[in-house]
Length: 434
Ligand SMILES: *Cc1c(COP(=O)(O)O)cnc(C)c1O
Image 1 (cartoon, rainbow, N blue to C red):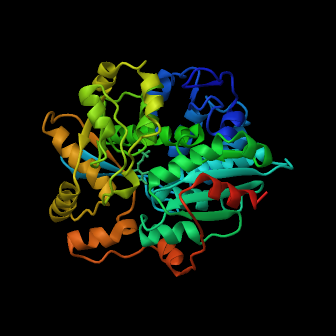
Image 2: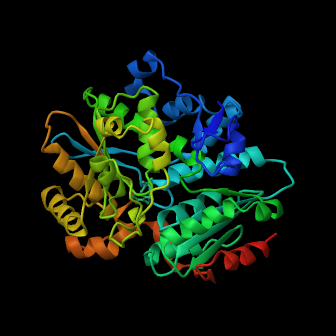
Image 3: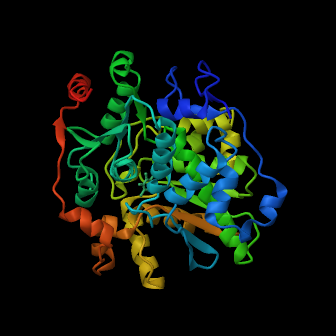
């Protein structure tokens, strides 16, 4: 498979090149030149396949630079946890994507990207540096996924005081090849700094950088896999109608991964993008105008994004036609108040506890369900409620036990380097690591 940039100037890149660059030289995002169509017999027996079998059949279309045997090993090592579909209402399901080591769906993308990069860098003498901006979950998934991968150093930019105490522990306690940089600023500032690092030619000559944010295509390919898996599990329950899939969204990497699956032939009736009050994309779907804004702080903080980075990819998929986009994607904006109401009402009705991000999705699902009742709706559950227990415990009035991987992180000592929200400051700190 060859890749081009959404800005159209950079073309003809291979998979190892795009994983090692992250961002295209013209500043755009990498896209595959074509969309492979999964064959009819793959869909005919979908319900009989395991997650890893599905993953291999889909991923191999993009990864001819990785031998089949190696790809299978990467897949079974990266996806060593389950992703069960659970029913929480009539025709209403959640796909739990939080059973990985950091308990958010970002483990799928980070673990696959780390292992693929590790394969391509094997035996090389140079070090690849990874810069990543996080509002919380990306940093921990990337730290956990890349910890001790040879030939890779990771720098995590996170906004000081704006991630949960647990998230902070999860991303500042690894040490080794992982450095946490605490920025006096917002997540958008961190994202901007990361972009500056990637496009600084002088710095990249001294130390080459790639990204582990969802601007790196290597995070999105693995995320497209669980959309097939959701449909496989529905079919196993005898539900064969194309579902509605609801995606709690911030930078829109996850939603784009769903659109990829549909491009490859997965029958999905509609995608629903659920955001918190940072509602740039739902507004766009209504008006055709994309108004990036400063992000506002909410209780679903991993979705506090004012300028969603994967929007350029979604635009390219629909040739910039917002009406066509609107036929495929509906958008909803959910306030913190409604998010909490949903956590409470789902708990009271079913005893199921959603984290705030999942609850944004469930709120939108309930609103969308009002318009149609016969199709299955699947909400992607993006984080374990214990990750956000300060909020969730107060809403459901019940203690939530920390799973053991999170308890372990809480006991470790935080180590971070504080930097001002200033590119020169950051560059100086990075160059000390050449
Ligand atoms: C990152 C994240 C999201 C948003 O995903 P995008 O791909 O950025 O749209 C939603 N929920 C949780 C828990 C996250 O960590």
